Image 1 (cartoon, rainbow, N blue to C red):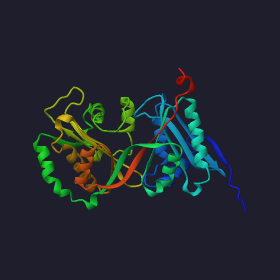
Image 2: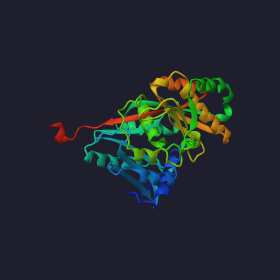
Image 3: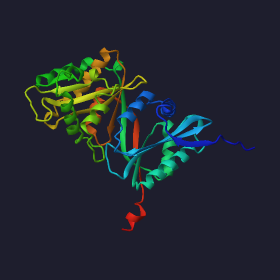
Image 4: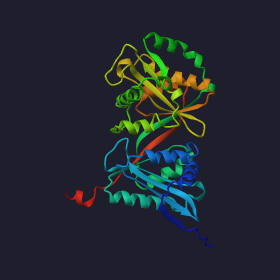
Length: 338
């Protein structure tokens, strides 16, 4: 006996009408990292209009059941490189909806001369179907990143007293970003420091610097960023032309599901080896514990052995491996024959 499936219609995103439905699909497919309609609205408002972005929805019986997205990689920009994501609600997976979304998105990118498409997945059991989906279409793993987790309630933070005293004795002060609000140059100094530190993070890709205004909107003005739990390391006798006394920082954000995540932790080369980066994380952990505590998640690239070792010493436990999948597309015919 054959069973006919409901017709699936592909259409564009309607803002703000579809945001709740899109957030529901994405959260159901990835309950480990849910999103809200407000977060999606901020992403749209902050998007650089100079960079390509396209979004396709799959609608079944009047309900949004899938989302396909592709955009330029603003973190590692090349005009021919794109990030893509296909998300289908778990209740309707296996019906060809993901294939339809992927075909539509890929066609749009190929029409633009795309030569590389990147996507993310992980080794978590719930992502097994997604990994198979990518691999059947020729995607290959190009990079690995490890996710680790810690709950402040399970960590003896008193054992780091000596570390914090030693860092302070070296002439370094640790101050929350919130408590630096009176510094009129705070935002610019953090922007310059962030870019300097990212140059030394082994991420397996060439980085693109975001404009100052974009960085502020994405980082300091993000309501999910907890500036009171994010710390800066300062040397008061230092006056760098770009970063002033700022020599390192660690940021902490909050997900609506209740957990926290580390966005960036780094220290300038001249101050490494003194325990400053670890002290920054400990300060954030203590501030979080004082505010009620909670789970912290952090993400580190496989070659970043120093940070992986530091996190292990702090008590973080490996939770998952995240894979950056890459699909290398043939050059457009006119370019290939030139």
